[in-house]
Amino acid sequence: GGAYAVSADPIPHPYAYYLLSSGSWDRVELDDPALQPATLSTSRPRAVVLSSRAFSDLALRLLHDNRPIPPAISVRPGFVVLLPGPLGACVDDAVRAGARSVGGPVEGGA
Image (cartoon, rainbow, N blue to C red; front, side):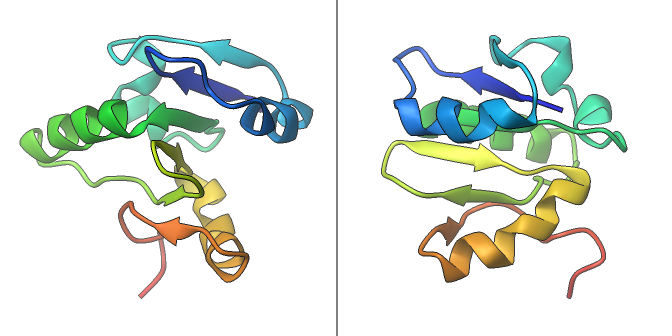
């Protein structure tokens, strides 16, 4: 469990506050092995909070490698929460609560 944080700028406190209960909060760089496609698609994924710029860079890298972009949401301008693997099941509830879906489709979804 837990979450990764990827941003050159500080990430707003609510992200860390609400995701900390799922495990450790680890700040990583975009090229960290934890953010490689094979790791993102494991059965024990972690949420990833990224700046919009880092999300765009990651999405372009995945598309360039012909890999899918995991489900993701945007709650406030400037930040995206990547919800890989089974965490993607949270996207619909997040959208109903006011978030915007910005990533790929949920695995097993239509």
